[in-house]
Amino acid sequence: MTGVAATTRATEIVLPGAVAPDGLQVRVRDLPAPARGQVVLRMEATGVSFAEQQMRLGKYYDQPPFPFVPGYDVVGTVVATGPGVDGVFPGARYAAVTKIGGWASHLVLDAADLVAVPPGVDPEAAETVLVNGVTAWQMLHRTARVAKGGTVVVLGANGGVGSTLVQLARHAGIKVIGTASARHHDAVLRLGATPVDYRDPALYDRIRALAPNGVDAVFDHVGGPGLKQSWALLRRGGTLVNYGSASQKGENGLGSMIALFGRLYAWNLLPNGRSATFYNLWAGKRNLPAFRARMSEDLTKLLRLVADGVLAPQIGGRFPLARAGEALALAESRTVLGKVVIVGQEDQP
Image 1 (cartoon, rainbow, N blue to C red):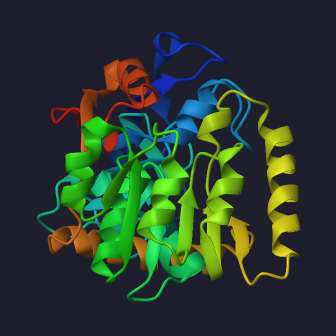
Image 2: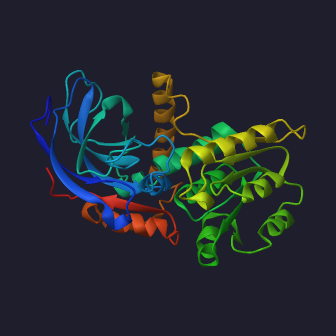
Image 3: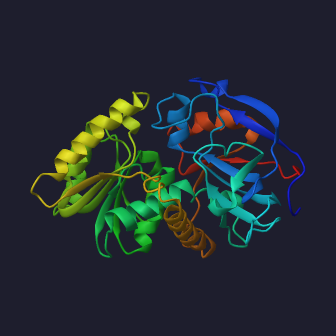
């Protein structure tokens, strides 16, 4: 299990085009041996995020052309290393944010993108805080920079990012108002947020009643017409962080992004002390060393919070790789609490 690998046979889930979840395809192929600085990772857990839901429709900004293997993040065991790999050990468990490629039994990755998973942390638990966790962490601590004692609104507090955001904010001493369907209110309350029914026609009035002086940040993955009302919830000095457009799912990715950026830019010109921004996990990747260092730092903190019991993984469902289509369909139903996880086979080499 050291040095350059022998040929590795990989099972992959392929997104062939804009198909329904049951239109995903399975292929088996031989992976190339890892090149200098690369490893072969045996997947133990990957997951379904909003990105894959948009990619399925061909509407995710900057997605690759069809066909391709989706999978935004992955946890697994290194089974082989290429030359020039230092500090990454075969047999050890690592996590990585990949953007694509995670829905596979094995994949080749750059060793520099791996982050060690602490001993005792289950791969499925680690999976829930990768793209969801780093998104939540960076929006809260790097983008909005909400201080202890502040108040924030988390739209979709039952979702993968939202449920993590609630826990991180509460751990930082921040009050949270979280929207969710009524069936998830007890769970959102247990996470530490004050739940509000997102279907309530008076939703924003109810939030204002809970925070009459305004809030320090709103984390909005819904976008669309409601974005203006999220903006109106802010106090002076508050920040609106938009990180998705669930209300416009299926619309043209580039066109929607251009319209969104124009609106956020215009709001930032208003003399009211508020700010609005779009969070992009991949911002700054042109400076790859700095991007990797930031990603490693934040993921290491998140995985340590899981190991210490501060973050409770929220798993909305588990599916084997061969049933990835069912996993995608469940995630798209928007009925689950947390993240839908896809798991690998323990008997794979």
